[in-house]
Amino acid sequence: MYLRYETLDEGRVARIALDRPRQRNAQNRGLLIELDEAFARAEADDTVRVVILKGNGPVFSSGHDLGSKDALAERAPGGHPSYACNGGTAPPVEMRHRQEWHHYFANTRRWRNLRKITVAQVHGSVYSAALMLAWCCDLIVAADDATFADVVGTRLGMCGVEYFGHPWEFGPRKAKELLLTGDSIDAVEAHQLGMVSKIFPVDELDDRTLAFASRIAQVPTIASLLIKESVNQAVDAMGFPAALDAAFTAHQLNHAHWTVESGGTSIVGTAEHGLPDWRTAPPVRPARRDEP
Image (cartoon, rainbow, N blue to C red; front, side):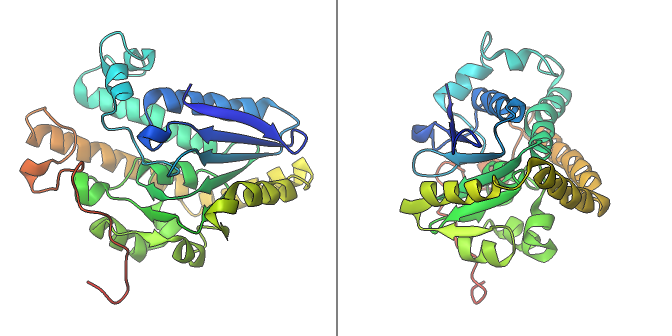
């Protein structure tokens, strides 16, 4: 079990907690499968009106699991069954495309359109693929220690994570800056950008997020769903789905490039290509307006 599921507020609020604290809630395949099942469970429960997604331990999530013991075991022969379907047995480039489409891209879009209001409760570092988990939620509530960054450009030579919400969440120029530098923004700036709705002290985050969710749960379900639909459809009319599709294709081209450049040994850029080793890379710097 890689997460915990509970209902609160007389069943009107479901809380899903990523529960790999030793791995900083890195997203291995087992966790993603369980998360999809947990969202489906909350969606099917007619008593649940709001779903909170949080992470246990020091951070919300450290992004994709790039090499924990669990992740390596999942990828080995006889490991997680999801690696033997949905393109898992196809040639390398097709395999990567189909697997990432299914487990990173399509599921994130599906969670974005869940038939319940969703609230991401984030704290600590919210980096790279962790952004996808937050962005697919309707609202984001942050602890006062939260920082947000996508470091895959500067550390892995990639053009961003699979669900490319960056221009829509940060704004176009800020998205370029953060992707090209790997710098982070804090909860206050994220709130100023409109990405974060509330900022709470880290030691009060659970209680105050639940109070926020319980307040939203008072809204009749038909009204809350149609509010969600109205806003999501407005964003879709602006081109959001087409932009996501195009960026995912670019992401796969980026993987294919590094596959060729490395002679098939890596799907991302490595130190041999002038990038820092992601395991020993220096800390993420805050994006300061008065510093280069």
